[in-house]
Image (cartoon, rainbow over all chains, first blue to last red; front, side, top):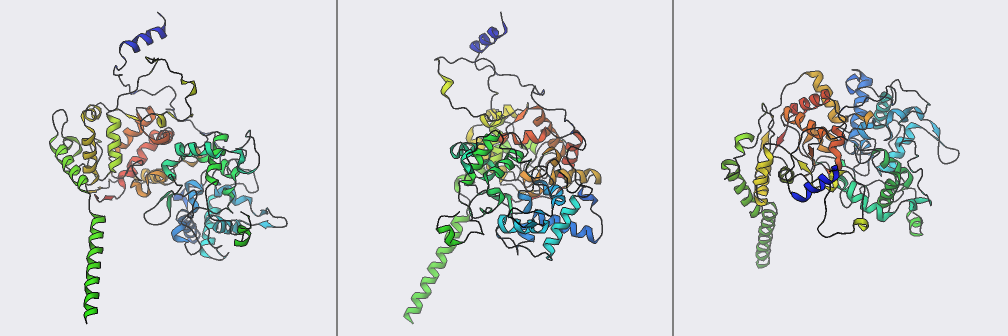
Length: 289
Length: 258
């Protein structure tokens, strides 16, 4: 008797036979933890190694502002988001725009012609477009602390170099997806199904996220008045899809395909969010963004 | 004079109304009070086929740190109920299965998702599973409501400073170079728990935390949302487990039963 015939007979004879459960690793499970090749991604210094001096105090303040922007930089913030809501693991996670990779890439030529973007200007843009707030001045303690924290994270990191893990994973996450420009590469309908299966547990049915008891968000809101504005880079379908593919669901980055993340990005960006602060009310009424 | 008297009466009625509305909003619904009472009785005395919970989980569900038995006091009611249901569930049949009437499955929509999003979830334990199987649905709800309403104050365990430092690093930041988030990213600041999905970890005995992480790795516990916990546990070494268990047991934590 062949193996499969025996299996069929067994299943027909006792369809509800109680299976004995074995505490053994399943064949597909990873029990031996593989070690990443040394030097594959840059590893920033440990928190316990922050020097015990004035500079170290500035770095510590910067870290606290980074993870609790909604409280400690609230005079510049517009919504309750924090830096660490997107720059995961306190700005350390590769492919989630880590600060150790960003530090060495500024100043750089800006997107609009004739402009040069400095690191501080980039932080100001983050406050303006993502936190929907005001740009902190260059000499404000918040700005100085955030810059010091980023600089400390990039201790011994090469500057002006293409580091593995910088940005959102190289931005090639949409490779192989038919792109018709804008959000049409992803399907909002498919995105809704995927959103319910993959994102709803943490970010909620209405994308509202889960707020902390004190200040800020535990899981950030993805759309609605409390989310980032349409002027944010994450409001671009390709950027959001790249971010999702590299980082989401949390801890399972890379588990979704490029098409799936494009669909989810299309669904999320089809929802209402605060308008681009650069676009005036009349422009918006006339049919701008 | 008359007008002011009417005004006074109106204000008084309004005040009483507001007071009553506040009371009505903040009172515990009677069905939950009844469930807590039923749960208290069941947890203390047990019944035929169900031993009393207090015999292992201590008087008010504080757990047993030495034996690694988890605390239940102050956990989310939805979480407790779900775990009991998952404990009592039979493992699904694997292998070839035939319908009595042949059906065409080719038109069934399929989504490629991890195993645990398509199955209700399994959590097998030689001691807990037979007990949970004997519980009726209303008893599960009663026990969940009872234990969620208990106060709990963690007794922080001292630990080796270097182990605690490593544990704190894992809890706050995880292992970003492996893409692993910290515990607090989902389980809340200081692991106080977030909703019914992400349970409170603070104040759980270290042997329990390590044992559960081993089970996530081995696949014998598989009742997480989206396979989130399994994908985190996969990357944890033995040292990581010990450091995180020591750090979680070192936390100050207080649950006020609501």
